[in-house]
Amino acid sequence: MSTSTPVLARTAGRTQRSAHLAQQAKRERRAAWLFLLPDSLGLLVFVGLPMVLAIALGFFRVDGFGNIDFIGGANYVRMVGDPQFWSSVRITLIYLVTLVPLLFAVGLALALLVQQKFPFVGAVRSALFVPYAISLVVVAMVWQFMLGDRVGIVNQVLSWFGVEGTSFLGQPSLALATLVFVTLWFQMGYYMVIFLAGLQDIPGEYYEAARIDGAGAWQRFRAITFPLLRPTSFFVLITSTVAVITGGLDLVFIMTKGGPAGATSLLIYYIYEQAFLFGELGYAAAIGSTLIAVLLIWSGLMFLVTKGGRFDDGR
Image (tube, rainbow, N blue to C red; front, side):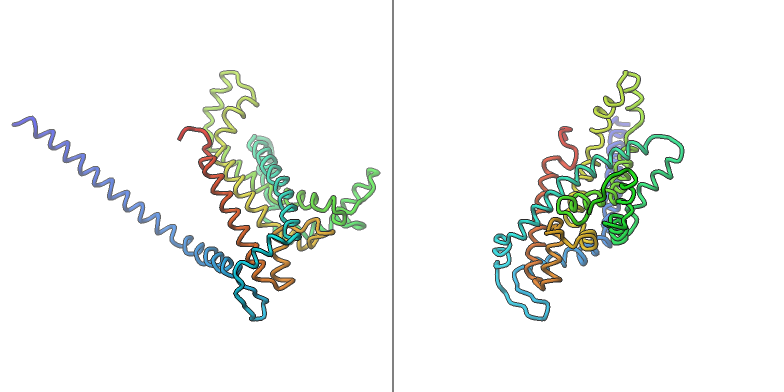
């Protein structure tokens, strides 16, 4: 028998395996698209379509009473020259650069804390996450009551220590800081859970090897935890930025209504005012469309710069 027969048999076997793997990959791709189809349809109908309509609405003057006039880019020109719009942008940026680092730092610190083993750690995790499970409207009403000038429990507790009570929501210098605090209290449990999931994905062998080499807690965090948490950190930075800019309407509407003296008039509340209080639906749509465009550009740039959270790992 010729020696080429086994070679031909092995070649035929590899060809069959390749064909089988290709068929399996094709079936998996088909299954993946089927699983993605319901969510994709939901995003298309409830997110994509309203977004397109909002962009189109920005080129019209709409008063909410059936009067619609095409005005081209007049709403965008008006937006550029609107001092109230720029004031809301400034306040939103202050709110953003204050709150996002706090959410990142506090969420990570809490995740590192509840990752440890101590009595009732499960109860502590639940207690920290519970605020996020509560309706934001309820959160705003509870904190508004607690921070009340005369009957608020916060001022009463401060008086027990000889501290004179103050108006947390009535002073421009304190109102925005109070919103930052309440938002931080409400959202920190969510980001704690995200970071905790990232921490639990880090293999324990890395820490064991570092301990054997004599690395301290800070060295282990700097050399192992923080680098391996980069994809999670990227996700937290993107989602918290979007949540801070586009959220907070409930808090502002119930607690301050943009006051005092416009000190808490976030951009999202300014859009609400223009649309539903002043009937300027087209102008509100123009501002909202611009906000969406800025967020998409910023998210894309962050993804390109950080390579989706992998940063400088060479891939």
